Image 1 (spheres, rainbow, N blue to C red):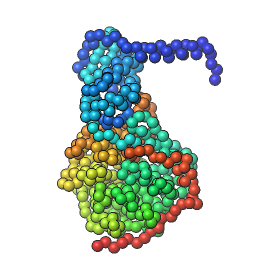
Image 2: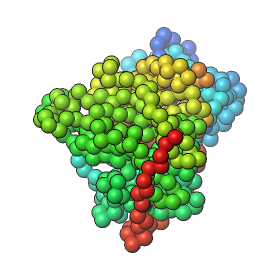
Image 3: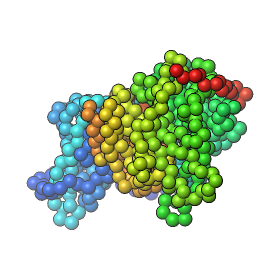
Image 4: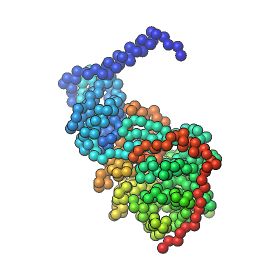
Length: 505
């Protein structure tokens, strides 16, 4: 590339001029009060935020010559930002210091702009946010995938440090023949024990990291001809419940243009120590579709979603699929004996003309967070999918106020139970983004906010969707190349064995 010294001097001069203007502390005298909030994106207004979250960088959507932002709380020196551009990047160290010194306090964002026509300074009402006392888990793990759901090119599992903006790959599919990688899951939000599924020819199985060892396992057995899919770690770490699904996808000519449905679906129980698979007729009933397992906090119940199998004697159509509704069930479990017991119905969503997906029990066992949608069980494709919260002691449930007109799905609790993260398509109806909400002691969920990025306009140009966000307390420590090498060692593939189901009492 050719470089001309004159153009180089001009470029450097422009950069220095912009730096000087951006850093210059404008003389703001007698600003005119504007009795409304400034329009900013992302919407970081009226939220409760963790005391360990990265700076909430944003774009001021008000046309102006200059911008000034003051960020202040009760204790410590305020942050002063002067800029000639609307993108506001908050200094990391100053932000972290202000957050740490003001847990439980209000934080105010006061925005002042110089009007581009009159050159008059205008001051907006301060944006008032609350700093929580409780921290959020330090890392978020997610899959980044193109919204073109029929392509597997460039899929990756990534982890993001929520204290700052550091992101790194955990494992990607490019070195694995561009196959599918999905459904990562962690025991107690801890990366010491975790798994991820691989759909990479010739391997279909999972990478399981347990007791400082990573193993490649084929979960297909004589009982389940298809591999394990949606996972749920038992609290003691000895077992993992999985669904085994035979999945189909079809497309509509108009409206929501795709759907995913199960032709068959059962639940299995994987024993980590013995590398064996078992099940029970109650959770693998050929008359029903069972999916999305999740354990109670004490490990004595397995929650899951269930719907009747479609009548294969009739013609399956898109309208037929709209009549498939999943109910919320639970079954007793004896961890010492590994035996399932009595089956109970928790919520008959089918009676409401709705369908339940993705039950997730809070760490303290008090609440159950789940999705309800018009039909089916693939909530990320359904704009009708909303988040609901159930108090397990009473069975009372409610639709959360944090929902939007687009899909809310794939939610996860923090280890302390005071934060949830979920995937939402509320921004454009196409790309799912990770949103966080604070949960108080009574189970009230507060206004969500999108995961902050260093570039304030980051999401405007990102064409990938965030899938399955999972909060963890520390980073995944295994090197990406080590995981890829293990995944490629097909000769070391361990075959799970099926054992007959123990007899229940």
